[in-house]
Length: 156
Image (cartoon, rainbow, N blue to C red; front, side, top):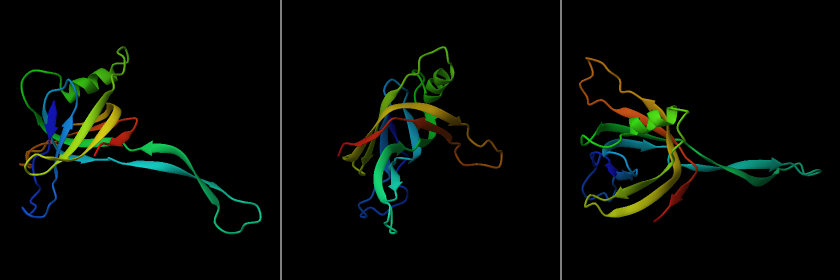
């Protein structure tokens, strides 16, 4: 299933940048995502002071850390098929096995050509937030969902 952003974000036609992205989550109903954050990875830095050396300590790499991936989404398209919220409810049910999926996030230009892609391995929804409900808020409501995962790989 393709999940995509809402558009170009008010950028000029010739600036060469795009905020359009598609997210593919297998076996789920189409949803439009308005934002994506947390697409990052960091290596733990270990410090080892050396005896007699009063300068900076030696460093080594530790474990890789990944951030939760968070999406702001609008409405789900279509009437049939499982939604992200359905998947989240299954995750919350401890009697069911934890079902992890590989997500694909693709940045596209205005013509839909792929510029770059990231694969997020063994992802599962770990947090869901309902939209702010207010009679004063006339903007479209947005749900937020966060995913735990086990790594990011850049494909292009």
